[in-house]
Structures are given as structure tokens and as C-alpha cells.
Amino acid sequence: MGFVGGVHGYLTGTGVLWEVGRHHSTNVDPQLRLNRYQTGCFPLGYEFLSYPANNFALELLVTHWGPMRGSFLGQIPSRDETVGFLLERGKVAPASDGGLPPDELRDEVPQIWNRLHTDEKERLRWAYYDQDTVIVGRELPSFGLAFLVDRKTKTRYAEYFYEPPADVP
Image (cartoon, rainbow, N blue to C red):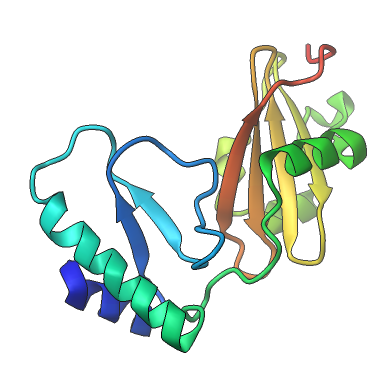
């Protein structure tokens, strides 16, 4: 880790911003276009030595050479934009199909497919935000969770909690 790790990550397209603490709502830093990785609220003790150096190297390289190879370059909608779009234009998986979305969506979101199991108290909703993003919402009576997935790389780049509609079973 540290500075050398940041340089190596940038050059290989695997660099991430390391952080300690709570989870961000977007997993991609909107300015640097780098994924964030949070180690949780309980630091191990060495983070203050390696994390800032890693992040400094990545920020320096992105600033001078541009986005890292493989970075998501599409628009990153805010939580409010995402939820509004999903609730207004999203398709709901019909109960007659067991509450599962169509097979085409399985190919779009393979990274999160196993997190989309449904039961009688859950509903799935999805929408194509633009040519770069598919939004998948998982709605339970107590909360909703929207995943934003890059259609090109098939990876999740953000997730937002939201208040589901009152008609969730």
C-alpha cells in the first residue's frame, strides 16, 4: 500500500481510494472517478501511514494524466435523481413471474444478481437511466435500496437507501 500501491493501482486500473469510517452513498468519487473502499469504523492502526499516501498518489495521477483506465465515465446521478427516476419510470417485476425481473436484466447486473432474491415481502423495480447505467431497486416494507450498475463493465458504482412506496407488500 502507500504511494507505490497508489501508482501501481493507477497503472493497472485497479486503484481505489482507501478510507476509514462509515459507508458513502456513492462508491465512486464523482470528481476523481475512483472507487472508494471503506475498512469500517474500527481502524487497525496503520491506516494513517498508508491510506493518505495511496490516495495522494491516485489524486496526483488522475489530476495530471486523467481518469484511471476502466473508470466509470458516465453521469453519476444524485440520490434524489436516482430515486425519483426509479419510482417514476421504473418497471416492477410482476408477481406472476415470482417477483423476478426478466432474464435480460440478469445479464446486465451479474455482480448484484445474488443480492436480488425476492420473497413475498419484497419487490424489485428497475430502469435504464441512460446508455451507461441501469438502476435496480430492491424494495421491502421498511426500506428500499437502489443499485446503480455500469452497463459496460457490469459493476455496481453506487447504492442509495430510499423510502419505498406505501404499496410494497
